[in-house]
Length: 225
Length: 252
Image 1: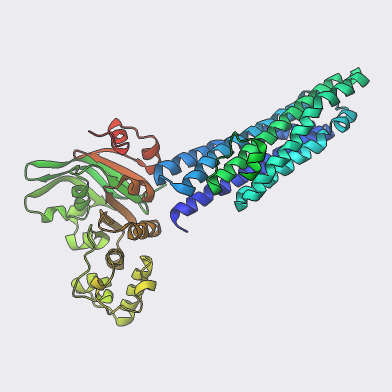
Image 2: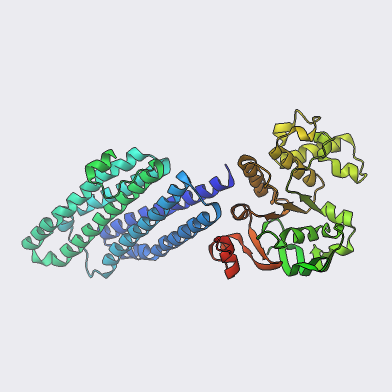
């Protein structure tokens, strides 16, 4: 490997490490919600600083790489993609942090019936799986796997679309669950954003590997593009 | 803490009345690659040639101030000893045309009258050629003339010749300007390896090369050392406007 390839590999490794941390943040925020574990939620909030530090370090390393190596072709696309992926991962980190804060600020445990009725936990698990699979697509430069993310994001969109109805039903049935229902609605909205962020990341992987721009295409064109 | 190997203290060079290098103060750390860049005529090569006392070989050339090697003024050292400790590689590959590849590598010993047993000579030749990633390419043709090699291989042979004397510092004066891009890239990769054992000071016109190969960069302009900093800082956030103008191509 040339010195430049070693530096590129180091940036890729750094992004992968950040990715694993963000997945863990999302997983822990889910566990904190499920078990109403305020200590775990506090840990997520504390570790958000590490996600931010990763973002700054990767940005800085990319800036240095541009200045020093003047990358072209696939190396240029890789770095442009990494800068955007970095930004998307940081936002997913913010989402995990935001959800953890709900656990910290909530005065009592959440109503499990609202979880069940809205499918929030299943949605959470799917969001985490999508994020993990997108990491694999990045690691292996697997654009078929990256393309599969677009379809799976629609599953998350489905939960989100049904949320108003489902949350409304819960409230109508028992007004006592109002606060919990509003928290759950907010969480579902945030998880939908996780889907959007991973979809953006998948687009960047395809851009980096195949030099194809899929942004702003309709979903069908994206699958086939 | 990084230790200094070469230090210039108020160093000035002249060609007759022409003041070419002006009051340079710089501390060059050990086992690092230092790029020296600047426009033509800025004094970078003259400064380089002052480090191993080659400047004084030019009629009418004088110098003031000090160049210290490990704390000792090079002017107080024997010039041959200085050049043993500070090797130099030039712009054009210049292997001795009448010598074999083998003899080119150990030329420094022969020319200095240092006699070595054959086994030791063999060891030095293999070690030096391996250091410059040339051993695999020439090990079966060591008796052939050095000029039989391609330009890039010849330049690596010249680096092997310098390395054979086990110097502490290697000076490079535009070492790849006569080479094609592939040979250039091989020499640049070599710098990353060589700096593990030697301190490299590389004069280059090529800014991208300075960025790629060096840990620290010195920018010279009109004989002055304008800025000396970590290469990453120099190319992302230069402190002096003149450096910024030079690296962004805004010099008029």
